[in-house]
Image (tube, rainbow, N blue to C red; front, side):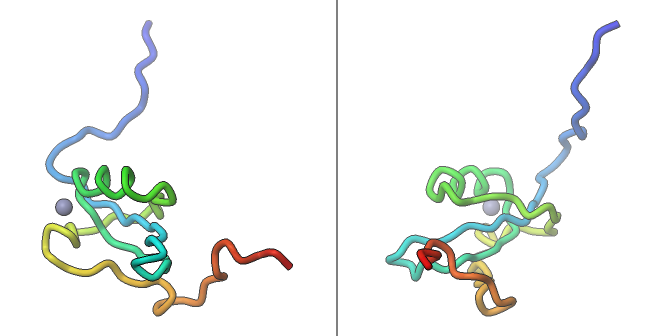
Length: 85
Ligand SMILES: [Zn+2]
């Protein structure tokens, strides 16, 4: 008996919440957006820090023309990269 990898069936667009750190020119802040698969791929290629945060979204922020949420405004986060003390 073969063992099949357990994967959820793929039907329709799936929106997942993704976080990434913007470039220095963009402000270097960590943002979160709910994205479709196509835009997740684009963000993952552009921002190596992109990672899913384990939540589903109900639409794609980029497709709908919304700006990603800046997490520094939503919840206090430790600054990334400046831990030289
Ligand atoms: Zn999209």
